[in-house]
Image 1 (cartoon, rainbow, N blue to C red):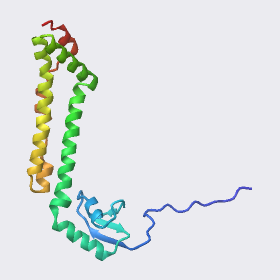
Image 2: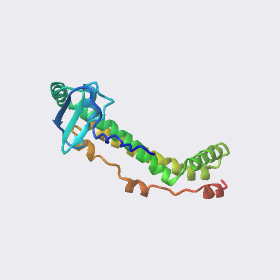
Image 3: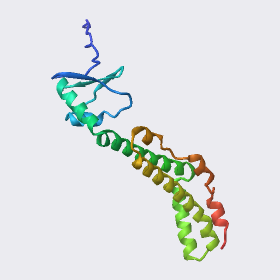
Image 4: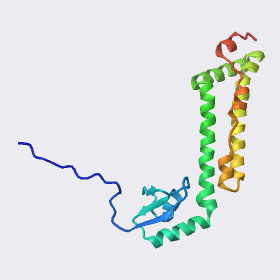
Length: 185
């Protein structure tokens, strides 16, 4: 005869061993720096209707951490936002290139360029250099966007920086390995 086993109820909140504190928290505002101030970096707080619930800290500890957080927006808000945007720009530019030229294709272009320069095939080298100019333009756009972000003085200005990928698309020389190899000189 089978036993009737009832599973335990699902937990909606982590098991706590200490107090729980709450604070009103603006949406899309970084929480990790606040948790670091509380020595709770590994914790996953709860967010519900604009209220942040932090476990294992007292209300006084949370209030003090929020005060410290708000007193230094450069460290706790702007620098993390700048770092995030820089990573995003680099990744999106890399993806932009890879959508047009796969890594193995760019490696073959590099080998062909080295050979063309070594063998004095100036027209072939010039054709392939178009791809290098294209990737340099993309890199320059990424670095310019990162510099804009680094110069921005507030979160809205940081978030407003974008790379114009439509302008970069127009610079794509659409070079091909077949065409490169067909250039005899």
